[in-house]
Image (cartoon, rainbow, N blue to C red):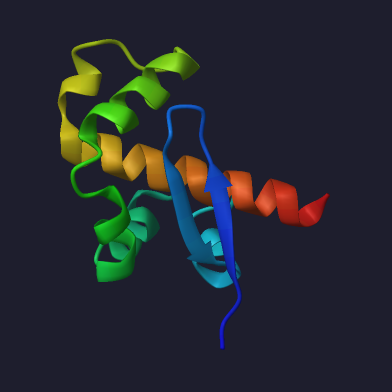
Length: 94
């Protein structure tokens, strides 16, 4: 059995992934291709389906993206998965 870790967000959104998955999207340099690959995992996408508004609210709270950027649900899924991976790695390392 593979251990799963949770990234818990403020807007009622939680994302679960393995440490290997989190590490795959949390590294130096561009992670876009790695995030896109992780978004091919049905277990990851199932956690995001129907949660577009919660994802948008969570991302808006960071202040890193404006309302035009946050209108793209696919990009928002990539952003939240990237953040989740980084959160898991930070928690695991501390």
